[in-house]
Length: 210
Image 1 (cartoon, rainbow, N blue to C red):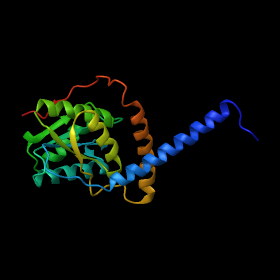
Image 2: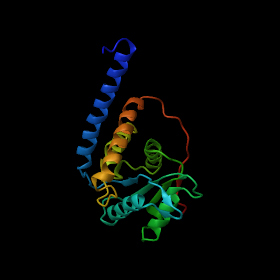
Image 3: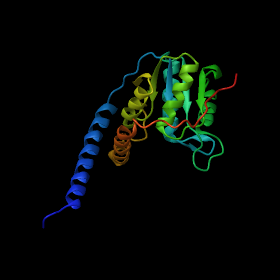
Image 4: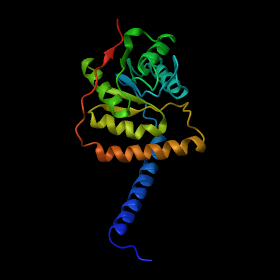
């Protein structure tokens, strides 16, 4: 049975989209194996939700990695990102700040963005903080499979950055990695298409008082 007219173009579009997503998934996985950790002015930590008054397990792993970077002298400041999760009364970044303070991180080195809810906003707001604080370089902290998209967005925001993925990611088995990888490939592909659209100004950013 022959496919005619619009159906042929629809099929071609679907096949092309599938190829692009698979190609990007391979690139994402390969980049996830890289650890570019080095000295930088700050670490930008991608938000990942909370459980009541505590960071989610995924967010906790990222925060623990950021604490390690600070304690090892890799960075001088920590930028925590994350607005209100669904049903939450306190922003993710505020919960994360308390988590760091309770583990001995000085209040003066913590900066927070309480408005962002997606990676593009995380990075956009972190750039504002970096500019205000005269920070030039950043380590990006998230789960390994998130790093390629986060790095691309940082590049588009003129941030000199390097990937520093958490070594204790909750996504370790293929049962958890594969859905994350496919979802991330979809988002990465979408961002590469939409990245040239103007960014809508939405948010303010706050520094930890004191």
